[in-house]
Image (cartoon, rainbow, N blue to C red; front, side, top):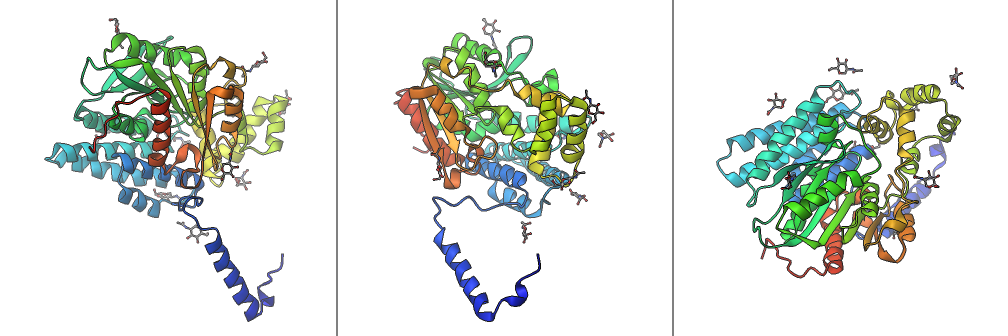
Length: 440
Ligand SMILES: *[C@@H]1O[C@H](CO)[C@@H](O)[C@H](O)[C@H]1NC(C)=O
Ligand SMILES: *[C@@H]1O[C@H](CO)[C@@H](O)[C@H](O)[C@H]1NC(C)=O
Ligand SMILES: *[C@@H]1O[C@H](CO)[C@@H](O)[C@H](O)[C@H]1NC(C)=O
Ligand SMILES: *[C@@H]1O[C@H](CO)[C@@H](O)[C@H](O)[C@H]1NC(C)=O
Ligand SMILES: *[C@@H]1O[C@H](CO)[C@@H](O)[C@H](O)[C@H]1NC(C)=O
Ligand SMILES: *[C@@H]1O[C@H](CO)[C@@H](O)[C@H](O)[C@H]1NC(C)=O
Ligand SMILES: *[C@@H]1O[C@H](CO)[C@@H](O)[C@H](O)[C@H]1NC(C)=O
Ligand SMILES: *[C@@H]1O[C@H](CO)[C@@H](O)[C@H](O)[C@H]1NC(C)=O
Ligand SMILES: *[C@@H]1O[C@H](CO)[C@@H](O)[C@H](O)[C@H]1NC(C)=O
């Protein structure tokens, strides 16, 4: 199209400027605007907003995240990794040098978060030794930090169906007071360490116990047990419930809630459908079909090859167009790379085939407990799926539409706000009245 710049009179130029100013002022409400973009790469922006959220809960510093955002190059995953690695090393060194136990704890928490970010975009090359090195480093820092909490976090290895569920229990140290307890798990790419900051400290602040956990496909089970995701997630969760119910004297089994974050919105729904001991369920957000979510990003011509069942052709094309294409959008490229790693396959076709089983249409009728279903209005991973899940669950479901500052998938950037909503619902639903606040 020829440029029209030549034809603008000075007057129309002023008019356009006035219109632009008018539009800029017309849409502005902080209750409806999205958070400011921290990077032109939408995937990096999303991850940086998550990191910024951790700053509300002792998992990062706003200044560190904003300085990282300032230098990370869009579409350059190495740049993302290197930037956070530098922050991690610096904060870890400061932790080691600190005299104050509390300074060391906070610096170790931040260093651990930054090591996790350094790892996040590295999963395309399974032989890259940094995948394990950075994870070891985050574990070292995180374990040092939780060991110095007022009541130290306890790592627990729970034998499950031919593998171990790995949990971390955070309580209040009074073995004979039974407290409401939240079991919370993440999804496709998060970690249970993130969850302590994301939801755990809020739970502890309110007098709850919290246990985070991981199963196949997730950071340590994938690394140390070599297992990719499996859809029958009750096999992961029920052994953790056995532990909470049978091995602990500080868990109130009548106030036991399960929460699932991101793809965890499927995993938790599946677990709750087959595990009767929960009294409330939180899906952040609702996941109707993982297959729909993942393939949303792929062009229809490519999906035609998938449906035709030609695995070799599909894999060759997807590898060329997405997986190995440095100019493909990070969201899509990383999305497939992470899936291959976490589902433990080198074939994109197999990955997408496997995701078909991660759907709730057949199991919502088995969910018999009050269920909070999050729908975030700008969720690009599972757009509109929360509404479908809530409709299928019916009267037991409470659908909440997060918008504006909390509009992104999993309310990236707005964990604080989201937690006020989640725990308000949980406390009301489970009739929890013994809340305490650290700040009182
Ligand atoms: C984002 O892209 C716009 C348009 O290309 C550019 O002006 C801006 O400087 C970029 N911002 C960052 C943070 O890279
Ligand atoms: C990506 O970022 C790294 C710095 O972490 C830099 O060395 C590399 O040249 C960048 N790659 C491209 C293609 O710009
Ligand atoms: C993957 O990592 C290994 C170990 O660092 C390296 O030897 C290999 O060249 C890498 N492969 C690719 C495709 O970058
Ligand atoms: C990071 O982990 C690697 C592998 O376990 C280890 O050799 C290295 O010393 C660790 N680095 C730091 C700073 O702890
Ligand atoms: C739970 O208690 C049983 C029975 O005492 C014990 O065998 C098991 O190891 C405990 N589980 C964990 C994860 O501590
Ligand atoms: C799969 O696609 C490849 C490449 O287009 C083609 O050579 C092969 O014949 C196809 N296989 C089948 C079973 O259709
Ligand atoms: C790589 O991705 C870009 C952006 O999606 C696309 O325009 C280009 O055709 C892709 N390259 C190949 C070889 O498919
Ligand atoms: C749901 O049930 C239908 C009918 O039994 C079956 O064909 C389909 O494979 C099931 N879907 C999943 C995801 O289990
Ligand atoms: C959620 O809120 C947004 C913004 O107000 C609105 O556009 C959207 O329709 C709402 N979605 C649902 C499911 O209520």
